Length: 386
Image 1 (cartoon, rainbow, N blue to C red):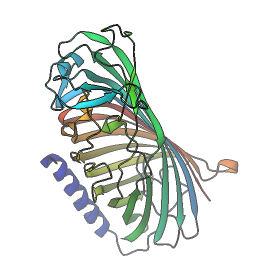
Image 2: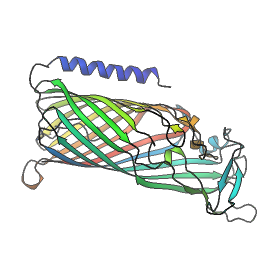
Image 3: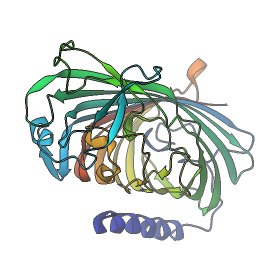
Image 4: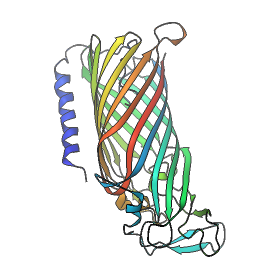
């Protein structure tokens, strides 16, 4: 599904890296931590190597907000989505007290009855980097996720009569990332390295939850009755369930008060997980430029392009009247614009400590099927080298 626009962006980024790298590859590369712009914007991972024997500890808080629904590049209202046919119609799903020997079995309606309104995904990321040698840095990234999705329930089997709204929540440990950053060459101010990473399936893919059903308020039930379901939609799960390869290349450079760089990364799903599906492969390319206004402060601007494939296979326990329960409604292309600010401690107890913020908004977005729209993202981070 990867669009030609995204493919061309990624190819252009790779060619740019090679051209800039070859422009100054005859001098030994080095990395300097005492500039406010010595690292990429905080939303970029694996952007630099450490000096031999050097450590870095980092904490990032990331939040992505999604608002509304779309099909392709067109925005849809909740009522529009509620009138679309549901490809999962006619399937049976368990609802109610799932511990009972015979919980309630219901038939999935022919139209979408539960429509996402907005969603926040927060991620706490703890990172550790160590300079094994001058040319190799080892990294590990641990994640903890919080997801909240507000949804609107429509009554009965069809129509646009609203029952009410409710919020679904999941939280827990996400997938763990390990990587080796391997220097490929460069000059004193130009660096080019390989990102050789893997993602380990430490995040759950069997999260349960509760919903406000289309029959709430009917046949003597309470109008705000929440019932349990066996499994939440794919986007509410916490991991991929597979060991994923994460190869990539990163280029960085600086000149007086200006620094710039780019990165191309992929996430490749190697096999189906235990629930008989695999998430889509992801291809990303980003480029940035930063200006150091003072030794302790810099600002940055960044453009990122991302293409994510559709889910292959299906978890048959995930079903229902939410469009995000259908793998057909997965896969997307997007381009984001991000602005950042970085503060570097230059002395005393804050020397070599970096506080950074980056915020972003989508400037292009195309989805497969019916999905939520990205609205904005924020990353706040603290890094300490020693």
